[in-house]
Length: 91
Image (tube, rainbow, N blue to C red; front, side, top):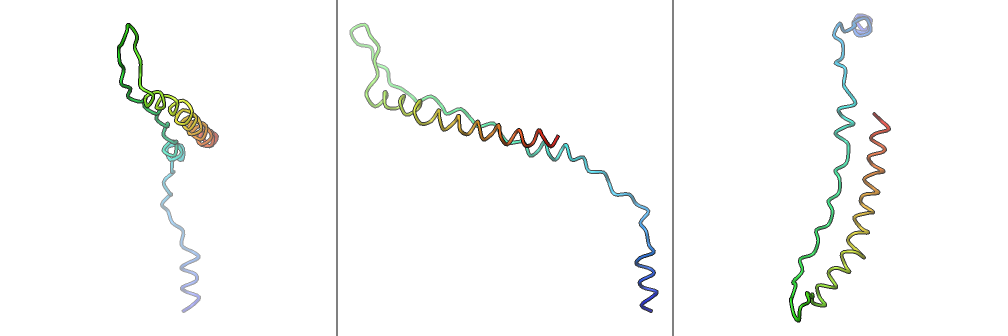
């Protein structure tokens, strides 16, 4: 009985072919999303004595934007490039 089962299991071959999986579509879906550029801060402008000016708090917003948010975005962009390079190598 055991020999019949073993013969049936080892002797059977499937006539169906496995569907070919297009790996390039899968790899393309693995591509990372481009990070968004941080929005420019909303500033309150004042016009006085023929000049436009902003408050000290708004000046701090601009400094924060250029000193913190933009470098963080550039780092995210570098990580994006590295991930994208990995995906492109696989294609």
